[in-house]
Image (cartoon, rainbow, N blue to C red; front, side):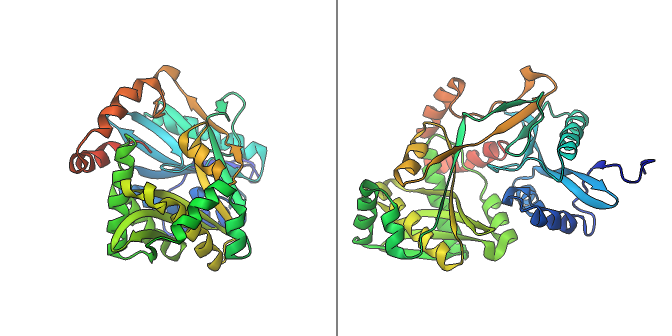
Length: 352
């Protein structure tokens, strides 16, 4: 107990203690935090990948006044780190004052040293002035949803709109849900899609944990050609926004314009669920997905990330566009899909 009862106290949160996660969830809700600030996200990551859920909580006069969600990531290939938040594109500090924000980050430095994590990675929020920070590597894409189906179609620039119209005239149907058949189809499509990009697939357990945890705030939308699923995306719904998060298409999806149909149908589905914003997620600046989202009429917004390292030489590097990974990516693209699906989750669960 500090001598000054009004002083701010910082402690590692015990999310397993009765009521603690619920108390922090209430703070995140009151502060209008992101999906990735929620203890529910951290806990689903832990169940799905084995990477430990933790975080720093700031308290004043017995009330929560700050929260830094953290995933303690360990990988034999990529090393150790504290990430806010693991497997997320957002997170970072959430606090009622600049002083509390600073205190959360200093406490994270101490926790990283105790946990033998060489670095702390912050994906959003305020970042101390003496930490490394950047806003030129990733961009986010958001736009308001239109009032009706035709207006939503007209929001999309003409060239991309023509592809959507083509998909609407073809033999494609749409399924939305979370049953086992839909989960299996989504994972098969996603695994093939990321293999084709040269990226190891996340464990299916991560997707199941997220769907189970978020219940009616998450679902899967799948596009079928006849009886064959060809494109699929796992979505989250948070504070009026829909977030297509893990999605992809098989090789045939490109000619069928199935991905275009998928995202358009998701916009309509989200509006019917009461959402008002379409969060198209994060993309690497200048990448193919970055240009694709611009083609939909979304304007890129730079995302500010940052980090701290006790020894910068030991900070992990998981940037897939780094030249050191180019040969590995090309090799991965050539792996037989069953082999990639077998060993990919063992690698990807350590990326965070």
